[in-house]
Length: 289
Image 1: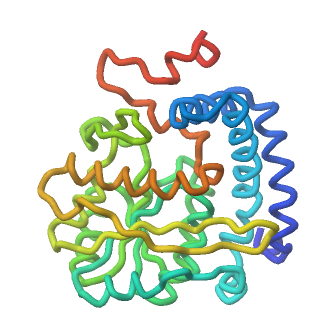
Image 2: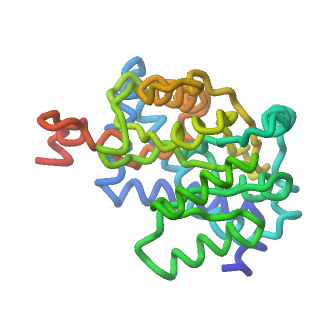
């Protein structure tokens, strides 16, 4: 795989664009999940516009998969030649307050590219959920740790380590749009749908009154690379987990709406509803006949 990282990014993305459409064509369930998400999140779009977004998302999903060798195994200097930082001063200002910075990172663009900027410039850690495959687990953690990112598992030990890491004024990255267990989340709107949203981001930010920013790594066209940008997140400086989760989802939705084809729509983000409430997937007779 490390040798594959030497393949030009434009080639990987070209293969990914085609592969993604083939994957959507043959993998009916994943395509229907993405279609269901797009239908309910963009009701203002016509059927034709929704279909166009679906197949653009297929291309971007394929690119994300085929970029994996580049994103996991490139040398930092090579990766950064393909990466521009739009507003680095925003992160620097937050870090200089010395209260720690919680970085919200949605499943958008290629979030792995953050590993080539954040730990090269700031003491950085990242929350992660251990993969079921030990081999995949080692590949993922090794690829992130080799560039200086500290990995904290989502368990009691990892959470305590992460809280200490934040208290020391460091950066902590949280993939905040995972679907949590019911006891670990609250229901707040996301694209107009009640969505179980994790409280973990607020848990890390609140004790030390850490700064909170959202970061995106948007894929540029024609293999030109990625643009990293930092965004403000409103409503996190509160004791109310519902208000904090609402602000988090608003920030994620705002950036996704700019380039919706680069979001991970194949994920059942709205799958865990309150008892007695059917999810949008359960309502779709094609997914659950």
